[in-house]
Structures are given as structure tokens and as C-alpha cells.
Image 1 (tube, helix red, strand yellow):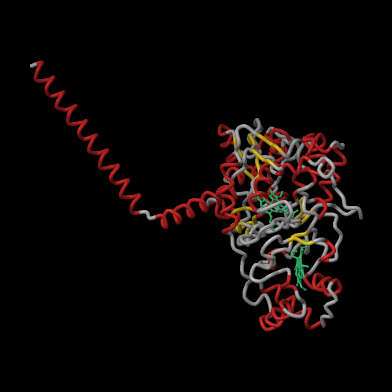
Image 2 (tube, rainbow, N blue to C red):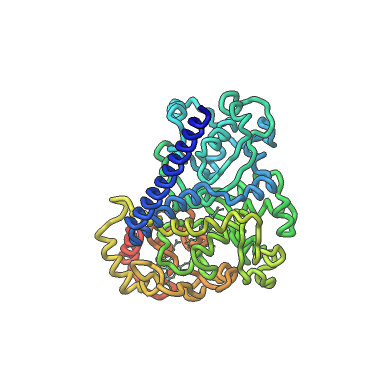
Length: 462
Ligand code: HEC
Ligand code: HEC
């Protein structure tokens, strides 16, 4: 009896091992076949798809651990939730958030909420609604994490007195470099990645923070000064060099901030940002993730150790940042790839006069000689695409804040998406005719009024 049981057990074990053995063989054969089936060409496509999917996620949602700055240091989350939820102050209402240029992703809202919004049944003056939008991950570029135990309070008992409901808040690239198409209402619609957010009042949002000591310590100035600088930026602008050189104002007293540019249509360009000399897209991505968003990562650039040009950066050691853990580096490849994949949007039909634009195209490459710098179809120079300030007849203040002391020949495709805030790095020209008039004088082009307006129509068509 006993031996029969033993034999059965042995047989069963034997059968099981055989099964495992053969399954393994067939699985590995299957894998080999799969590998064989995916030719290297196909592996390239798989790779491209996976980088694209990953990169989109990073661009939209990755904070790189910058909560250490926005939450731990600035305590921005306390101002957003307000005293009613254990924070400070009145809290940020959805109406105020929209007025500050923050955008709401319609596709992240559940249908019942959309219906309520349509009927006007959502109180846009209640900070609890802002928290709900954050919980739904519906505010572009602003990532909140919540104390889950209190989420019920937020959803159903808006005015419940509670501990800090919003555990942390972090920012992503999308806060500045994405907008929505306003399909539902101004500021509420479908995402448009890469479009410059010229409504966003970055300074105003940072100013909400109850604790600005991170800035006062870094810049060595008092809080009143920090607040004055932040207030000087206005919508659509940010100063990415302030934390390097501490220069908040130009010699003429105007704010040193520059316009938030689009982050589309960038492939083929060598140098990036308005001053070009910083580097490529991926250089700048690493720079922003580490030094602007203040995520946790590794960043190296010995040029920032130059205390004469970058006193703040040199003192803070920004030229050799080593966070542990590094939450940035692993995302750089996919982020780079995704950025390069975002096309320049084509202008809507009827938004320009096609006949005039065709005449403008001829002027652009001919009499007006724009194409010597804006080489079509890239519209920048292949190569080292920067110029000294004198080449374009402007001052060199901003140029000198970059390592190459120059200005980058700006991309022109999709200009129509960022007419708000003006043109050139700081928006000094309010309109395209102003830009053309500037070149007309600068380069002695002798353009007639007709030719000027033809050039404008051409620029609108790009
Ligand atoms: C607070 C707003 C803000 C955030 C957040 C932000 N940027 Fe920017 N970005 C800017 C501004 C302003 C410039 C222009 C800087 C200049 O020209 O001096 C810029 C420039 C750029 C450029 C250069 C575009 C060109 O025309 O060459 C790229 C690329 C870019 N940002 C990518 C990113 C990425 C990736 C992230 C997220 C890691 C990010 N940005 C986050 C404001 C922002
Ligand atoms: C010498 C090289 C050069 C020539 C020639 C030139 N540009 Fe530019 N262009 C630049 C540079 C550099 C910038 C960036 C300036 C800045 O950011 O402050 C620029 C910026 C612009 C912008 C602003 C883009 C933006 O996003 O704000 C427009 C529009 C423009 N150029 C159109 C033209 C037209 C039209 C012509 C011909 C009449 C022309 N350019 C000729 C170098 C040139």
C-alpha cells in the first residue's frame, strides 16, 4: 500500500519535471522564434514606439521627484489646498487656477463631472474642486499626491475640516509647454503637447508658496525682492537663468524673463533655447529637470562653475549635481525622443491669404534675404545656428547670459500658435509687422508696405 503510494508520487514528480522541462524548451524555442521573427528593422520600430509612449508619459506626468522643491521647500501644496484642508490661506479655486493660465484636460474628467460642469453645477470658487481636479490628474503639468484616507472627504464633503489632504505637489514639463484646445471652455479641452502656454503666470503661481526661503537663500536677497521679481514676469514668461546669474532685470529696468517657447518642431535644430549656446534639446531637458523643476537627478556642466558669469550656480554647485536616487537620467532618452516627435501644427485653413503668402515666400528667399539665416525647410541654419546680437540689431543682454553670448535663429513653423506675448526671446516685438519693420530697418531691405504684408502672410502660413 505504502510502496504504491510512493511509486505514484515518484511517477507524478517525474511527469511534472518532464512537463517543466519540455515547457521550458518550447518556451525558449518560442522566444527564439519571436526574436527571429522580429528583424532588426522591426526592433527599431518597436524601440521607437516604446520610446514614444514612455516619452509622452514623462513629458506629461513625470515630476522627477521635484516634490522636494515644490512641496518640501516651497510648500506650494499648502497654498493650493488652503486652510480648509489643513493648508494655509484661502486655497486655490478653479477660477483662480484658470486665470493663472493652468489648463484642464477634458479627457481626464469623468462624464458625470463634465455633465455637472455643463449645467453650471460645479462651484468654480471652491478650492475643493481644484483638489478634485488634481486627484483626477486633470491639471496639465501639476501632479498632486493625496492622503488616500481623506480622498473621500474631498470628493463628497468639500468643506470638511481635515488634515493636509494634498500630500505633495510636483510640476512637469507640460505645465509650461502644453495647452488645451479650449473645446469645452477657455482653459478646458483636449491636450496640445508642445504648444507654449503663454497664459501661464509662472511667477504668480510660485508666489503662492508660503515659504520662499529656497529662493531667498539661493539668491541671497530678501523675500520682498523675490516677490517683486516673480511679479515682474507676467503671463507666458519665465527666467531660466535667474538661478544661475541672479540677474532679475535688464539694464533698462525691464524684467529679464523670456517667453515660454513651444516645444514642437525641434528636430534638425542643433542649438536650442533663444540663446542657443546652452546646447541641444536633451541638454536643455536635463538642465530643466534638474535645475528649474529641481527634480532629483544628475547634472553636469563645468561652464556653470564660472563664478564670474554664474555666481549663483557656481556657489550652489549646479555644475555638478548628484542626487541619490537619480530620478532624471533614466527618462532623458524617451523624453528627448518624444519631444523630437511633436510636429509643428499646421495653420488652420483661411487663417492667412495664400496668394499673398506665395509672394511672401519669394521675398523671404529673395529680396528680404530671411532665408540666409532661416534656411527652409528647417528655418534655422544647419550647423551652429546662433548669431551675435548685432547681426539682428538688438541688445546683447540675454545673449551674454548664455555661454555662447549669442541668439539662436528661431524656428518659424507654427508661429501662429504663439502670437500672444510677442516675438523674439522677450516678446519685444508685439506683432509680426513689428518684426518685419525691425528687419526692414536693420538690414536696409527697402520693403514696400505691400511686400511687408506679403511677408507677414507667409509667416502666418508656416
Ligand atoms: C516654468 C516653465 C517651464 C517649464 C516647467 C519647462 N520649461 Fe522648457 N522652457 C521654458 C522657457 C522660458 C524656455 C526658453 C528659455 C530661453 O530661451 O531662454 C524653455 C525652453 C525649452 C526648450 C527649448 C525650445 C527651443 O525653441 O529650442 C525645450 C526643448 C524645453 N524648454 C523643454 C522642456 C522640458 C523637457 C521640460 C520638462 C523637463 C521643460 N522644458 C519645462 C519654460 C519652461
Ligand atoms: C542674421 C540672421 C537672421 C536674418 C537675416 C533673419 N533672422 Fe529672423 N531671427 C534671427 C534670430 C537670431 C532670431 C531670434 C531672436 C530672438 O530670439 O531674440 C530671429 C527671430 C525671428 C522671428 C521671431 C520668432 C519668434 O518665435 O519670436 C521671426 C518672426 C523672424 N525672425 C522672421 C524673420 C524674417 C521675416 C526675416 C527676413 C525679413 C528674418 N527673420 C531674417 C535671425 C535672423
